[in-house]
Image 1 (spheres, rainbow, N blue to C red):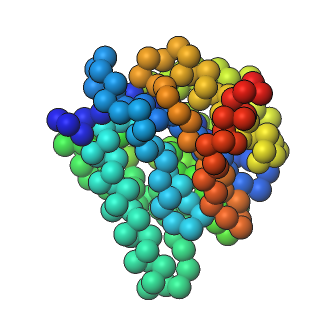
Image 2 (tube, rainbow, N blue to C red):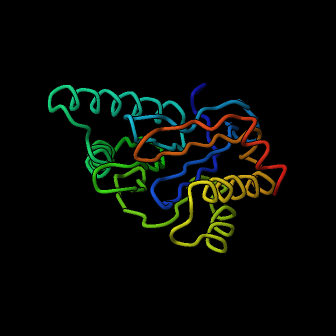
Length: 207
C-alpha cells in the first residue's frame, strides 16, 4: 500500500510542430500528502512522453514495460515505434488486465513521422486520439476550464508551454490532491526537452 498514491493533474496539448506535457508533483494517500516531488511525466522513446495519473506503482510498472518494448523495437527494426503503435500496445496491456486492472489514466504524446500526436488511455484500455487538448487526474475538470477557454489550433510551442503551466497552476489552487511543483516537457521533431524549474517558475510569476 506504500505505493498506492493517488491524486494528480496532468495536461497535454498539440501545438504547431510539437506537443507540450505538464503535471504537478504532489502524491496523496487520502488526505495525507505522501510526496511533494512525485514524477508524473516519463520519457518513453526519443520523442515520446507519457503522463501518469492514478496508482504510482501501477504507472511505474507500465512505464518500465513500454520503455523496454520501445527500445527492443528500435534495435530490431532500426526505427522508432509510432505514437499510435505505443498507445495501441499500452491499450492491449491494460485491456488484458481488466479483471485486476492497472489503476491508471495515461496520456501519450510526442512527434513521429506523422507529426505531433496525443492519445489518452483509461484503465481498461480505452484509447482516444486527442487532436488538441487533454487532461487527466483529480484536477482535470479545473484544468479543462482553462484549456477549453484559451486553446487555439496552431498555438506555438512557447505559447503552449504557458497555457499548460496556467492550466496546472489553476488546478493546484482548487484541487487539494494537486500541488507543489510543476513539471513541463516540450517535444518537437528535433528534441525531447525537460524544461528547467527556473523557466517554469518564471512562467508562473508572469501569470
